[in-house]
Image (cartoon, rainbow, N blue to C red; front, side, top):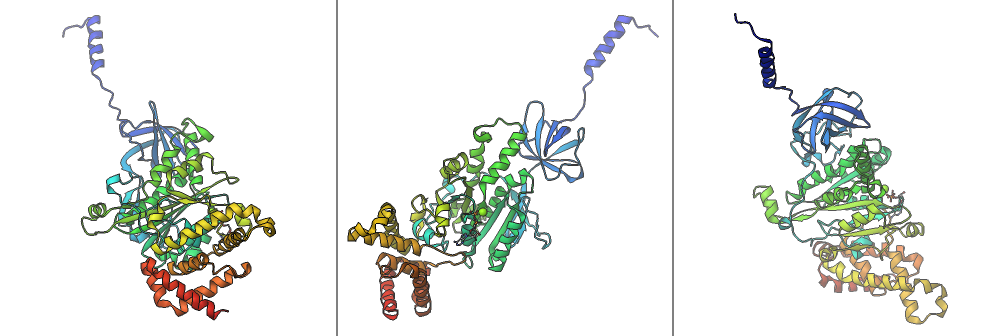
Length: 510
Ligand SMILES: Nc1ncnc2c1ncn2[C@@H]1O[C@H](COP(=O)(O)OP(=O)(O)O)[C@@H](O)[C@H]1O
Ligand SMILES: [Mg+2]
């Protein structure tokens, strides 16, 4: 055997060493570097996608939120206490999906679509992505069908159309939640599916709400999604998207759905918390740079889609338009709508209903500030008869607001001004509405007609509620046929008949 020289030997070793390839597969797997506050940093995972689900031991899952040069930031969905440094996690290749479909109606679910109402697991047929791109412009149709909320002030002055996004904004305890609950309760027997997303609320509160739904039969057409105050921030952040995906199921199948996000302020807080923990650069009020985007991408998904879109989604089985109407709620502090999150959401939505503490405390409930509330698209969707009668009401109230400050010196005012003040006062009184006390189109029409044509003028202000009840009773008992006709068709021609009904009513109630 030939003896190797020392220099030759070192050359061979060098050559062999350069040929060795370290086969450490860190493409789909990673190792935990650290764990803190529900956030995991991992080394490896070179193939991870943004938003991908990462699987850890013990059925713990996380979502990829940050992809950085040296590590990947993952937010854990749920409990993270069993995770520790050095553990492995692997890519699943899946994005987050939640169950959708008719089976969810009547159920209370969490952010991941798992039933939490103790009525057993949901036999889920279909799943869909939680984050989706909103339908493009060519898939959309103009909003021109009314969503009858049953709330007098809204239906007459700030109408909402199917597929619209109308913000409900105001301080705490001004009736924002109650207003939206009423809208949901009033959709009974209307073939509209409702979704109520409770974000960051107390569990006891949510239970109360579900009980109200059950008591008044609203669970037959409602899904409740809950991410309560005690749930991890990630669940509170994702809950609106879960609800939206569930609502889109109906929209895409040519049905109508209404979704209430109660409330998006808390969702923004949750997202801020996650972003700060991930060490993303904070901006105004410590919110991350994409805080506008999280709300716009959510609310853009609420829209009315055209027949072609529905046809494509259902493989030609349906030939109708579909809609998802969004009622996001924002809570302000001290009535300040110029704060960061309120201004963002105001600019995204198609109008806002502004609730005021002052009005609420003065007994004007719902405490809607009619001057500051608008609906940018609803007018074209309003029922014709209400539109015709409602414009006068709006005008009268606007005049009343101007004159209100003079009202104290009423003895020195001229006759016309006095009359306008009385009219405004009466209409304000008429617009008051108790909870769970809806008004149909016909009922609202006759009330508006009475207000417009000065039937209220000789009614004592304390008796307006009584007058209203008597009139509604009269209409419902004596004129069922015409009432049903107005409710169904809502045409302007019926105004003549309203006049006759009112004249008869006046004769009978002298
Ligand atoms: N139209 C109304 N008439 C009488 N009370 C109301 C009305 N709307 C709300 N309330 C009462 O006001 C309180 C606060 O309402 P809530 O909807 O919880 O306010 P928010 O969601 O704005 O904090 C509740 O106790 C509710 O019963
Ligand atoms: Mg509330």
